[in-house]
Image (cartoon, rainbow, N blue to C red; front, side, top):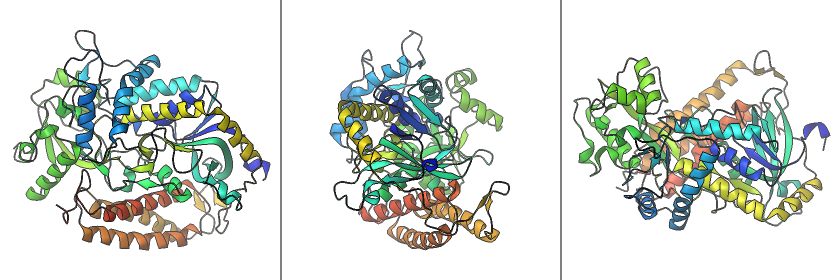
Length: 540
């Protein structure tokens, strides 16, 4: 191994800088040295877009209980949740909230100076802790500040994980359960790939909303951890369960701005283009029904009327209340010419949260030794066929805590893992393609035909459009089979182009969304029923 291609060994390599990755880094820093890499800026992730809040049963709330939160989660998950996991997470919630408070998060208070609790779809009680309508942003800022101040944590921005390192590939004579030894990392500034070893690798890369044309997710939500884990041989489960948030702002100048479910928790009513409230026709809870039902109902209403969107009516609330409770949403709508205190907000469903992912146990462990997955990247059994609103941030906290605690309790394994890596002959990164020199001035590969670069961009666009058209809110076997065939052709074309490019972030992201799209379609075809988010007209 050439020394210039490998960075120093770390006890923990955390891939991703959202809430799950940062919480794990803080917890694990008491055990060993942690490296956190972010594919762009540390501040960018789906966490900072989480408006509504975090679900937790607080001990001084008389009309709520752990059992109620458990049952609400199980009902929303449509029979596919792991009940033991649900009870474990719900029981931990108050302790993990105290972690956030210890790290500086200050949740909104009510008039009695107690934590103010909101209500969202699928919840039978008010149990959503929030910081106005920017809860995720505030939590992420506070936790990141703690991470930055920790001397045992190293941070690298603009570093993109390309591929996980398999012990079986490094040592062909090794036949036991595969082990992850770290990852090949692309430094986006130099466009060079280096070897990064770690005793434990933690995937915290978030979701995969960018696989769809319309999404509430940030630009980097391309399913990177899921694609890499699948490539390494880890199980990936429940990919057919992509949750579509019912209310994304419909405006030509704002394609992925979320209109929080908390508005419906404050009495917001969904109406059609004629001003008629329609949700009671579809569910007894009306506009506060679980997300899968609301999204399908909106989709049906739009198809019935031919309208481009529906509307969320908040005009029963004063401008003062809306500015105070939902400052970011009010401001953004007002900037676009929508006064939500006087007129309803145009909304449409958009790909929002992936309930599937890399299969893990309750400690975040995957099928591959020394490889963990936490946050939206993981499929833990908590969400089942549909996630209950505001359980996502809670999941990040609980499973990152669990993973760090398991590793701390098995500290001898960390030392043995390091010894294995020291004796492993990990090769330098080999593109396995024709090597071409990358030009930082033009941003292109020297000698690469410009038309071919455009075709690669078209592949990206085609995947996202076909997923929206054929693997969206309402599906059929025929649409899924069509998507499968078209994806197979795209993947074949991609393999041909991939061999002509030196490794760069755009190509790797394209590979990842193609992998995630293919997994989603194959698992959707395998599910011969309609359940939760996965709604197939052939199995009504």
